[in-house]
Length: 262
Image 1: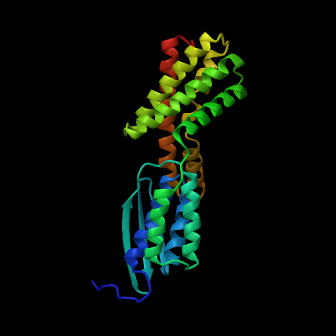
Image 2: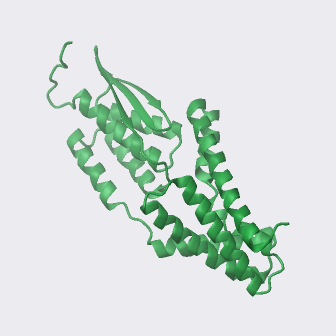
Image 3: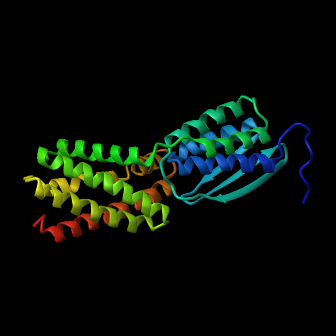
């Protein structure tokens, strides 16, 4: 095999491929759709000097082929758990635009990317808990729960979000995590709604678990299928369906314990 010729002042194919895939991995793990991952990865690779870029986006892996002239390499890497991080997502897009304009070299791009990962701001856990509680309580009112159930929904949803994070930090399986949080949140909401004299206990139990609905993955699954990535979209759709099954099981167990929903 012929070795890649040295090109003074230009990134090697290895550097281009690995840095572009790092952008793709982070975007996937931040909740980006396949189209966005493809566009930004290509943007980075071309900005670093690649003439040809072909990317395969899978549910748990990425594969990229980059080429300059007659030279080309293919590299693969694993993708971690898919989540949602809009701040990191937007920061990656901005850095990709800077790279595309040729304003930074490959080493500088790598350094800036590592700095983004370290310093990308995150909301404090307590704020996320409160926001989840407020959102679920608000949706509860939209769904028709009475005022007596609003505070129980808020408290149960905030507790559920805190429990969800703690289980995730302990690397509990995400589906088991969903079932446990769904059960605890719905049961607590239903129990406290009873104590406050609510007449909509059953609906309060459902409203309290709305924080577990996988909205971004559902939207990405639909977009991926419509935008020509049916394999990835189908995999994401299956994941969403299984999440909803475990969520439903948790609520059902909570209703059984409290004798609701009969």
